[in-house]
Length: 155
Image (tube, rainbow, N blue to C red; front, side):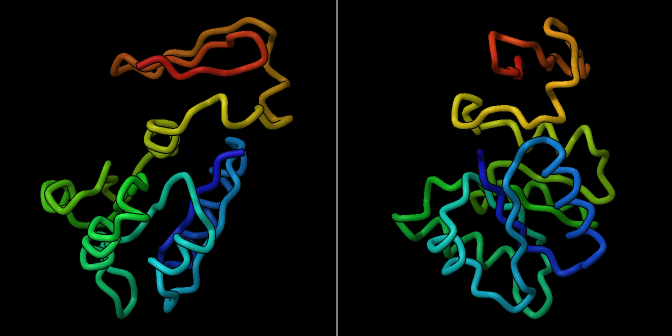
């Protein structure tokens, strides 16, 4: 099961993200607002980090830069989030993706799936309620389809 680490200071947003991501089969770990994010990343070894740009008393941008400078963490997939459109700055500083709040659940799921290997985990029981053969199109050229026991994202 792929693991996502959440660094977000809004408790409502944390609850929503945890629920949506767990429904999609991810293991989700939410950090305390005052946590040392880089240390938590080393301890938890997530497949991806979702981090708010304005994280309580910390700067998500500075944390992102520190992660990118650390050779042990440099390959971590980082998705930055903010209510302000700072996408270009986040990407320049090393983010893999950016989500502008408020974002749609479909956008969250698509960004979550990118860069994470499907073969790393089996689908959760929630997905097993789907018919044995189906295709879902999300527009923008992305679709989900069954391949044996695995659900794959085609982009």
